[in-house]
Length: 179
Ligand SMILES: C[S@@+](CC[C@H](N)C(=O)[O-])C[C@H]1O[C@@H](n2cnc3c(N)ncnc32)[C@H](O)[C@@H]1O
Image 1 (tube, helix red, strand yellow):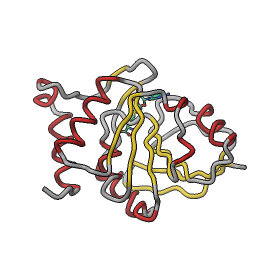
Image 2 (image 1 turned 135 degrees about the vertical axis):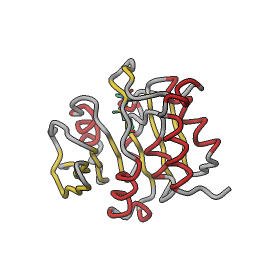
Image 3 (image 1 turned 90 degrees about the vertical axis):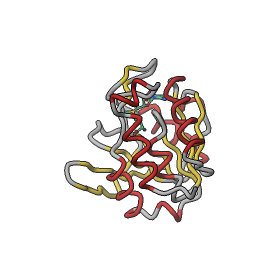
Image 4 (image 1 turned 30 degrees about the vertical axis):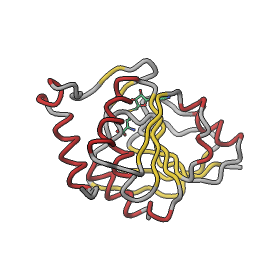
């Protein structure tokens, strides 16, 4: 069956519901080894990705991908990879990509600070804490891509704000690295 947003939306709605939680899914929030998991809102993410023409980017990477919701949506536009430290969340993402038949989506269980994140054209983060180590690494690689930060956050060194998109109470800030 062809991947589309409605299928992704329904799949994750079920996964995040109480019934989904009873079947191995996950409801609400989770404390992980490296931070805190919560999920971006799918319809807002779709809106931002359309506005930012994600289809024109070669590789999208979600740094701290949780259960893969954002990677799933991004994979409708381009090749999308998630990196998530928590094993259970990574397994949920893998299962979702397989069941939804998302050929463009993949996930790796790892610390994103140890991975070659600078090979992506877009790095997305819904930060659970300040992310200056991430921006330092991207700066070190003279990275020319765009950093898309979902929601409220403490601004970081080595970055410059390019634009901010809003939808309802949600927003996404686009940064470039100062090289
Ligand atoms: C707020 S959640 C965002 C999940 C997903 N990106 C979304 O927007 O739905 C942050 C996730 O980042 C993960 N994380 C934090 N630091 C990480 C690191 N250094 N390497 C890999 N994953 C990390 C946490 O385990 C958590 O699942």
